[in-house]
Amino acid sequence: MKPNDFDAKPVELPVNVNRDLWIQFVDMRAANKKPLTENAVKLIVKKLESFGALANQSLENSIIGNYQGVFAPKPDHSANPQNNHAQQAPSEPGYFMQMFNEQTQSTVIDVTPDSNAVEVYHL
Image 1 (spheres, rainbow, N blue to C red):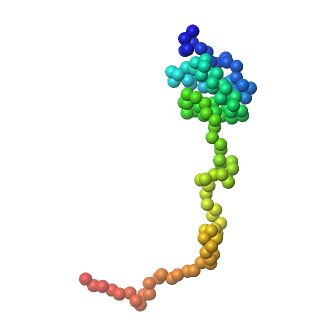
Image 2: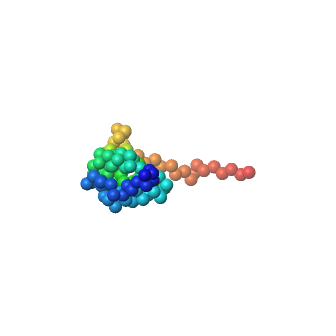
């Protein structure tokens, strides 16, 4: 049997892996002319099993990105804004002043020119 003759669709999958997603992944690999070998399937299934509840997300990411393998999904930082490095700065009044220990009182400076002090130049 040639490596290309191996049918990866009916293999035994961990209970946490969706069969339809698996078939889509196998089809995607075949469409990209990278059919799965028996050894590759064993290794990928082992990885999917180690991903636990994230196995299906891993398959979806691989299908969407046309990845040859499966990878543990990166954690979603948007669910926990304390760990989100891209979070926006607070917009409440005085936030920046408090951050720099400055007074929160504003001082208004009038910069309107005095009409009596205007000099006119003629060329």
